[in-house]
Image (cartoon, rainbow, N blue to C red):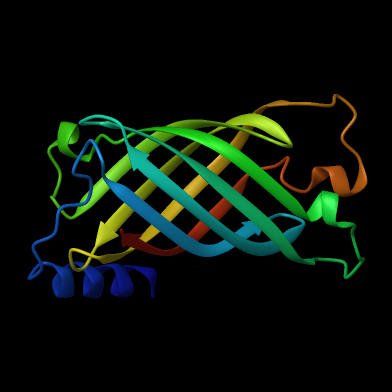
Length: 162
């Protein structure tokens, strides 16, 4: 099923002519779902282009539900991160509609990295997927709700040019 969806996306979007990352002054807003081993929630991020292949931004995730149904306090549900991206779609010589961006982030819960991709259907709208992993957690004894936002997570959703 995944292969069919990917094939349809590529066929439909092959007719579009969009520029994913235009460099200095480029602005992207992303909103989507956040999936973790213990929870699921929403994610929103904003990136601003500083140069031809560099952007900085902010990202925030909020947990809507924990897998075992237990209620957590707000401080465990929310994470806010400052982020740095290397937008390398053009460096790799892939489609003008696809950007790949590895990056680093520092947040309320940890210091980590992410690898994302954006695919634009038009000049203003596309989809994104992002994988996040913590490199250094602020506590060595992560227990209970502290595991939220301190584990591998995946974000998927829509991206907009501003």
